[in-house]
Length: 367
Image (cartoon, rainbow, N blue to C red; front, side):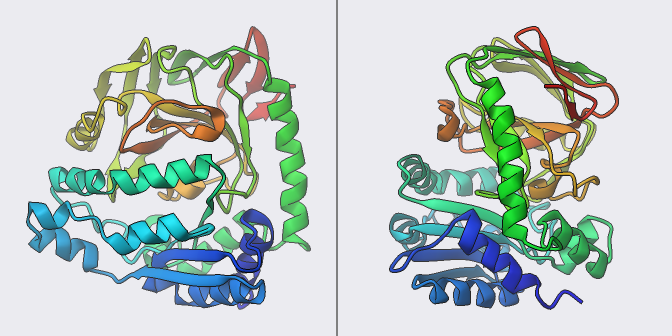
């Protein structure tokens, strides 16, 4: 039924999202569960004159490391991974989980040590992305594990992902180009503005973004996509939010997250489920208690929670905020080993006011 899924998605990724040119290196990062997508993407890179290189994790390698490795082993940075990040021109990351709960019983201290080990790699990654030396995109290949997390059959989930990526459109690339134009009009309206007030059920917050741009995410770095985002000024965030959706990070599900900000820092935090894990991440480093991103989700084909952030942060009629590392393309300066997106619904009366003008209400843009 979806025999064209892998080649269609590969074509969108290599033609539109992160185009690859003759002679360039295309890094494919995924798991062995995405074998059809690996082959389709490698073929697409080859047909465009590029050089595919592949890193694909097997089901239990990471858990074996966490179970059997000592501190030095867990803190070891694979030099091949660093070389791939240093040399690649384009990086295609394909989410393809074997088990969405694979990290749920791992000691958070070990996970933190692992993240710390790869801090230097991600520093190189962000530096190269910021210098426009490395293009990237994150997509997903449907697996049984991801379908179960979304509480769907694999067939239904595959259809959901297919439609979310607009692969059912007559010309998916043309669709995303049109979507890009719509979102860039919103970003253009926000140019030169300074302050946001976000309020509604479960949220009452303010932040400033003067001098920092908003950006449109329209399939260039994620597929599917659909958001506009900014990096709030580091010390400007004040107020409270009680996130209406669960959030998953490092394989851990955390529900009922409530955060209170004062002068940019989380000063109060709690969760109905996973509170200890939440607090362990907030204590990761100095930047983990600040917002690195504020965004508005706007994909009309995603209307349900699935437990996969790639989709959930794009749900039409939501906002999301990321604790931790900020994106340099919107001139964010906060640095952290984490970037944890949390989603909040806005369709039941949520509003966003920009410099005193109503910008957004109940999932609809008002400008």
